[in-house]
Structure formats: structure tokens, C-alpha cells
Length: 610
Image (cartoon, rainbow, N blue to C red; front, side):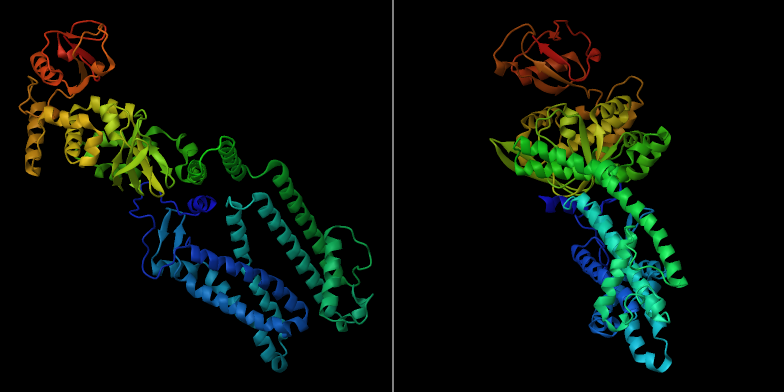
């Protein structure tokens, strides 16, 4: 379960409005994705080598025996791995934070690497200065210069910082222990560095008796590497902790200057450590702890109520994705902007996607602009139900990226119906027919959707009659193309399509029908020349019954029939006779009032034909 949710946290989220056809981004040939698992493992391996380099480079500067021993061979092997990484960097795509685009162009990758000073420092830190020092020291006597240049390997420490940043956000690891480990590493490196530099000052000062270690150990240079290193670390620790036992203290001006600088540094380091420990124990880092606390609450709830493993995975993935996408959505920022600016942003992000959907083909730009302004964007992790079967239709969705499955449940078994991808819609059948959602829609992988409110959509359609007719025509055309499995789940559709006498037409015939509709809109008498009820003035849906509203019937007889309201009362009686099996003479509302004019009726009214 944790591995699945971790894959969501480490995924590169596409920017809103960006269409991604597959689960993985398509990169150019010979380009490495920075979030690729194999590349991540390579970077983690290099971090281990960085820790060694930081420890060895200072040690080799201080102790000549260490620099000429086995560490020399290990340094060559380590430098070889970092040389390979320099070559790999020319093939690693980078994430442009200014526009949230993954750049995979080889020229741009190389230009960025060269111009940002990284290449120079990476090369300088990879040159084997200890080997050059060993070869040239006897002839040119410049060993100390090369020893100091070897400190350029400390440049690699930035990799350790990046690793800890990633670990702090990874829920698989304890934030407290990760942060504590980081503080311990900083402290140990400071102790190691200060001890080695202090010994380096003593080893090169003459006479040696006028040094902090030479005063007590006159032949400290002959005592060996480990003896001098242990003394140096001991002095560094007692000075860092401000204990200061007094057996080691400054004996010359150079040591006094170094001691003063080190103690000033210790003041800042101690304040840093205490401040971080306080944050860990008391205050914490707000965003990260809020995420982890919310996830812990969800998991405790799931455990307490003994929820199935699948539900726990869905809950965990949803909570994690919510925090990961908060920066992209920027809801707190957008809500303070004027509506005109928010509308422009929405059009820039979602216009192309909404324009491609079948339901809005041919609608006016004004209608599409209003619709896009009301859309809300969301991310859903893999295997999460966006829509549940039989739920109330409050919204419908347009898929921007990713993929979803449409399924239904029969007698407790799941049946797959279809697969939806970019620019496809889900939930519109329940919204338009105002019925419980007939299908369950579940994500296959990380998916980005835009959501449209049922209420806002119907308000816009009612105010734009011409666009409403186009939408109905597109919808009816879509219904005619549904697969047999889906039609079987919606038995009323077959009757509805037969009643409306909707027949498949060629593309040119559809265009001609729309031209006829346009000319009808301009007719002052309000008459229509088309026989297609879906394109006529009667686009209102009502439910008819074959009994008096006050009459009590058995449950099976109380089911009504959903129809489009015809243009006249006579046509309504004819249609009711066909649907209900008996002819009536009076139309009543649920309260018993008689209907004399069809124009007074509204969407989803209940009519009783008696």
C-alpha cells in the first residue's frame, strides 16, 4: 500500500490544461526522466559516495599518511563514478519551474548545465588532485596546493541536502527521525572538519611545542594517524559543547584566531540545532505535519472501523494527492483575484479541452467561455471512484489527462463497459436526464479532470436556447452511438430514441438540419420546420402517469414514463396513449390542477393523463 501511494507522491504532476495521453510522459530518445526510479537509485548511490568524499577530503588535507594510503585508490574509484554522472547529466531532462514543463531538448539541457556553473564545479571536484599531488610533489614541491584543491570535492554536499528534502516529504519515512538524522550529520561533519583543521594548524607550526597538542604530546606527529585524529575530535567536541575541560587550549596566535572563529560558529550551530529540535518536538513544520497528521487520522479511522485494504489505499492516495496538488491549484491565491482574471485563467487552461468534447461541438464561443469560467479542476489518484453508481447527479466531468473505466454492478459483480481518455466526458447522462448516475467511473491511473456543476450547466443552457438545441442534438447523436452493453443498462433510452424518431444521418444532413434550425430561430411565428423533436421548441422533459394523482396504486403501476414534451396537447395525448396503453382526455398536475397550456410546464414536471 505504501509503495503505491509513494509512487503518487513522486510522480511529476502535469500542469492544469496539459493533455497527457499515457501514464508516462513521452520523452525524446536517449533522454532520462529525472523521476525515473533507476536514476533515483543512482543518485542515492552517489549520495553515499558524497558522504565519503566529504569525510576523506578533509582528512587527506590534514594527515599525509591517509592521503598516501588506501584512500588514494578509493578516491580514484569514487571520482570515476562522478565522472560518469557528469556525462549522464547531459541526458537528464529538467523541470522548468516557470511554466511546469519537462524539458527534454538535448541542446537546452546542455546549455542549462554549462551556463549555470554546475559543469565547472562538477569537473573541478572530480579531478584526482591527490594522484597529481603524489606524482608532482617531489619535483615541484606544491603538495599543499593540490591538497587544498582537493577540498573542491565538498561541492558535492548539495546532493545530500536534496536527498534530505525528498526524504522529509516521503511518508514512508518518519519525519522526526529524518530531520534528527540530518541534524546529527551536520553536527558530526562540523566536529570532524574543525578537529582536522585544528590539527592541520598544529602540524605545520614550528616549533611544535607551541601548539595545542604539542604542549602535551611532544612527538604527536610520530604517534600515528588514529592517535592524532582522536585527539582532534575530542578537542572539537568539548569546544562545541562549551564544556572546555582545559587540557587542550590555544598556544599561538593562529590557534587563537581559529578557536575564536570556531566558537562563534558553534554559537550559530547550537542555535540551529536547538531551534530545529524545538520545531520537531513542539511546533513542527506546519504543512508537512498537517499532511502527515491528516493521513494518520485517516488511517486510524480505517483501522478502527476495520475497512478493507482497498478502501484504505484509496483514502491514503486521495489525501496525499490533495496535499501534493495544493501548490498547483493555488486556490487560496485564485480566490482573491477578480472574477475577470479567474475567468481568463480558466479559459487559457481549459478552453481547448472543452472545445474537443462531443457535447460542446458547434456551440457559440460566448457559451463556451461562460462554461469554462465555471469549471473546477481536480486530480484523482489511480483506482479512485470519481462517480458512484446510483448517486445524485451533482456534477459531470471532462477528462483532461489520464484514463478512467466505466463499470456497472449487477448482483454484486462488477461489469466493465468502456474506457474513457482525454477529452471524453463522464456523468453527463445522469445530469442531462436528471436521474441517478447509471454507471461507476473509476480512474485507471493518475488523472486530471475538470468538473462542471449540474445547476450552473442547466442555468446556462436555459438562457442560451440555440446552444441548448445544439447540445441536445450532440447528446442524442452520442446516445445513438452507445455500445449495446451500455444501452442495456439504460432501457428507457431505446424507447426514447424510438419515440423521437431519431435516425442516423450523414454529416452533410446534420449540417443542413442545423441550418434549418438557425432559420427557425429567426421565424417570428415561432414555428419549426423540422420533424426532429430534439431540435424543436419542445426540449422540455416531463414524466407522465396513467392514473389520477390522488389514486393509490401498486408500486409497479406508479412508475412513470420520461418523455420530451410535444408541441401540442393533442400530440401529448397521442404520445401518452402509445406509452401508457390508454387514451386520456385531461391533463392534471400532482396537486390536481388541470393543464390547459403546455407553455406553462417546466422541466421534470409530473403529468397525470386521465
